[in-house]
Length: 365
Image (spheres, helix red, strand yellow):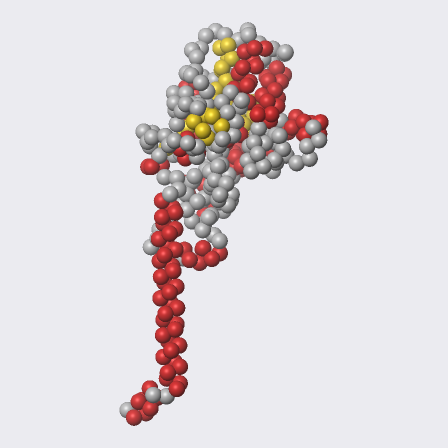
């Protein structure tokens, strides 16, 4: 017993005690930081897209809208969300946006079919939608106007069903759930490089009490943007790091079939089947040279689709106007927003009209 008290009063004992107290305090501090990081992470997750929170009847905010204000949840699992109908010139991405009662970007209802009607349905994402471009200046609206002026032998109806953030799999889901109701004569499928990516707004719920991960460690590693709640950002989230989760193991199983080149191939296969069953033609429209553009064009041709590649027209325009860099040029909305400008949309409209003439659908001008 005497030896114990002698040790307890010794300098070595005091050092050990201080070390234990320091380690314990550090562990408590780390535990508190971990709890705090989990709370913050859970709150951030609640602010991301949640289909239950995007009901059809919620009021439209005043002022400039984000994409979350422009959409509503859809109960089709592969569609996820759609444009809200009956928007009247709202300010979205710096441009006036109108949708009709069908949720299409156009003024007024779709006209009745007559013996003269030729109906074109456009499926695409923010590029075809015309993000950053006001009503009537997006290329499908221009195409409808030009066709009716240049070839009045038909009543041309060009329906813009594009939705920002959609990928090819979602576009096919829209066609099956809504698009076929319009009985299109031609489906124009717009393709851009990110159509192999996850749809926008998908997130994985973060369980703040899970022991399988550390919110604090992920924050230190800079992984909290991609490995936690946000899997794919919205097209207007410039303040976020624009990264999209591509690791299949980090994508919830219910969404893996919507992602990657296999998803594009599957959508094209089903589109070919629907084309035969419902009697419409398909025009595959590639906007710019990208990682997947040539591969996508080849895949479309192999399924018997007509194709239109806008890249050569854009390259010619850049060469003729001494444009060395696409981004920030007159072909884009701005330096910060690489979506097509009104000039780019005019070039796209002209390219599509020429393609329709080559296919014998529209009369040559």
